[in-house]
Amino acid sequence: DAKTTQPPSMDCAEGRAANLPCNHSTISGNEYVYWYRQIHSQGPQYIIHGLKNNETNEMASLIITEDRKSSTLILPHATLRDTAVYYCIVRPIYNQGGKLIFGQGTELSVKP
Amino acid sequence: NAGVTQTPKFQVLKTGQSMTLQCAQDMNHEYMSWYRQDPGMGLRLIHYSVGAGITDQGEVPNGYNVSRSTTEDFPLRLLSAAPSQTSVYFCASSRTEGVHTEAFFGQGTRLTVV
Image (cartoon, each protein chain N blue to C red):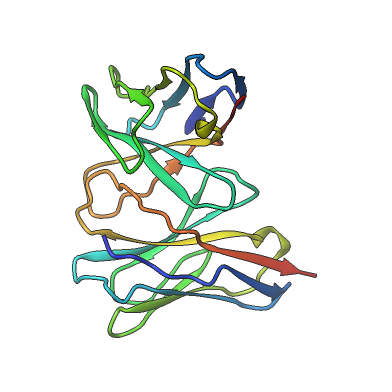
């Protein structure tokens, strides 16, 4: 599975957009980009995933570069409850059962 | 709607003791897995199962045993606990069919081995 590189920490002001980058330069054509987050050492929670097109859901947007070597998770209006560790994960499309390889993630602190 | 349930939430063991961490899911998911998370680290895969009667090793399987006799349950056994196994343990489940398989995690078991 391709490896990912994320900044260890980021700050964001409440109400502003949080943009979390992820580098996955060795990603292959049959691998998805997934994002999970972990709040206060709770179990991780799925946020969004994409293959090559930009994706949006009720939680976030995912922007994937045309060469697919990097992506950005966008929380459009960050709140204090978005303070968490965010994990960018690359996994094969037909990864039976969704076996996940976690890196160290980005610790996002949303400040008032 | 219970999802993935882990018990106990907290446990303290003495070195050499054995115990079983329980994990149950009510979503009829075929795939279940166990992760451990050490302070300041991401999760690491211990063991996983793609269905009843089928298990396999993950990144860090040593010191742990698993079995899968039913779809719902996937217990993790520590046969002889060591201080290096002090960690937070997470169980997860997901479907196996289909391209997108979102994993659902339990709330974790915080284990201390003294």
